[in-house]
Image (cartoon, rainbow, N blue to C red):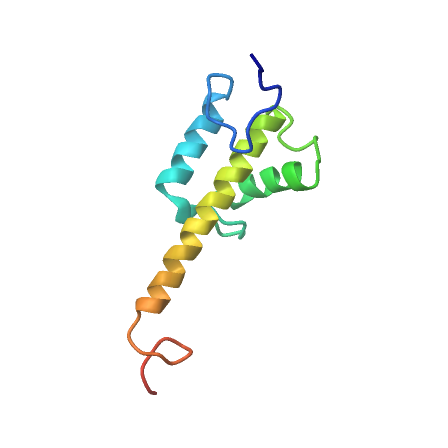
Length: 106
């Protein structure tokens, strides 16, 4: 019987994930529009630290979190971004009119 030595790309929320990460993941799932990297975003500063830790491999950022926890947060952040992007695309597609700015005529 073979055993997996590596986690799957979508790291599940397990008992080894700290409670703060679990709460933030739950918040991302219920309020994806709150999660952007803009400075006026509710979670922008936190997610920027996650980005730096995950993308730039800067272990001085969020050093209390494991690599798996950071990956989980980044993956959920990307998923939330896709949901927000899809919502915005649909809003624009369904808006009245076909002009480039989304309105009919002048």
